[in-house]
Image (cartoon, rainbow, N blue to C red; front, side):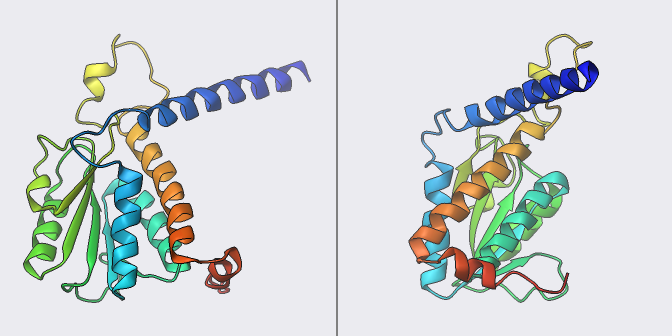
Length: 206
């Protein structure tokens, strides 16, 4: 029983530290870039008002966060598509691509952002490296998420023998999850979507 109590206490302590690290990201200044929450809600509300489509893309764990957002945008009534899904339609002038490149650039993200711009789509880039990343040049707007990624995790690791609780890009990826939950909440308010309407769009093929 004592062992179980100790494990619970340790788990609660680790969870608190993780949440504190992620929460601290949202108190960091983003100037000259707009606050990510406000930017995402504004851009998505604009697309919704024009009956445009939203495309999303990210690699690795960043991609998983974008897939989660894609699902919730669909639940809010938007036409949302994760790139490379078999039913992804073509992008056009009224549409928005939300792409993530935490460390600043990935070859696939760079290429897709360039293609989206070529076809008239608007590009919103999420990144922790807005000044040096290769993807920024393709973006119409940048959402600066001031979190550690694999671009700088070695700089903040300190003692090489230490084991960080949130290694590599975990802080950035966790911040994306929290950011997207806030976006869904605020966007639902802006669009006047009730919890019942959102729930009604959840799949029953489970």
